[in-house]
Image 1: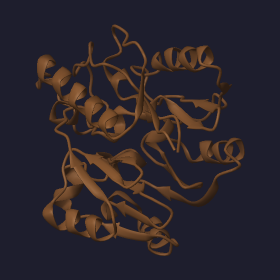
Image 2: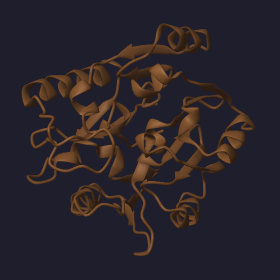
Image 3: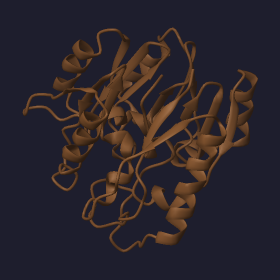
Length: 267
């Protein structure tokens, strides 16, 4: 299967506000380095056979580069995000227009819920896990599950650590039987649910957690990450995965790794 992913160039990427613990108004983005890192990620994905689509960046929307938050895609349906923070809410209209122009069935959630796209949904091999907490409301999940009814939803999990505000930086299903996760990101009850999943769920170390190793772009047996410790690499390789490290340190300044920078259009 050909993988397709949507990316947004970092033309306007900067730290202009603070909406998570990684962001600091005193830290500046090296724009040239950000472009180099983004291009290296795109090149790596294309080398792995991914067809890369691009949405135009917009002035005043520095976090639009994190396309994974823009919505959720399954088949030809696109669920548009309802961002929690006002600073990001204008992004939704741009993503909606892109998907309309490309012939997707656009769906919206009620005004009384918030949902930040594939930031809080992990889907692989027809199986899905959803999360709620800092950025997605628990009330959004029934709508997601109803709209993506073809997905076998095996868990709804609560995120409690503000550093790991999305499931995208806290848990990833890597194939039909394997996953990785950050234990401290979840409530005690959700950790117990993860341990009971039918998947072989690999807990990562603090080192890998803050290195955004869980924030992996999955391309078949290939995983593209910002960081992966030797121990985690051995665990993944022993399960048949190939790990590719791409430096996206400029984007970590806003709390986003490789997975945050892509919106998969196919699974």
